[in-house]
Image (cartoon, rainbow, N blue to C red):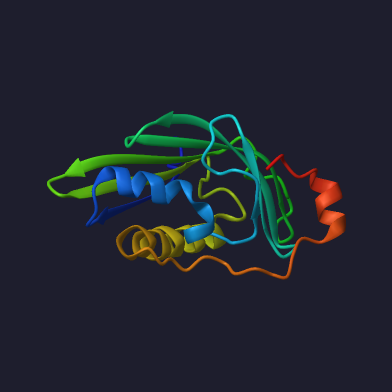
Length: 164
């Protein structure tokens, strides 16, 4: 039996186009510590939370107002034996209108219970999707990680930041 990837579903009181645009604005609901474009197909952005989690994520598929797929191309955790657990996993957002609302199904394809980071990532994603993203879509104000005072020069060099 294959393990199921992490999934979270929300119903927001906004039309699909509003939800779609908000999802692409990762700075508004996930983290203000993002370098690069989060809404341009083929572009990669860099996310980090202190030295705890760093990753590069590329927007690989866009179906306007219906679906967004992001591929994790590089990853490093400081709290797992396998620092690269997220590499080649996908962040998938599927949107479906329901009356005047929009159902959003978020799947982190490849993030499975066997991963050492699963418990932490499960809690984090649930908080970001059920709380911050939902609030960001409905009110325009999410609860992203705040700025940490700029990127550490060593991290910039190590991770080779994407073009803005």
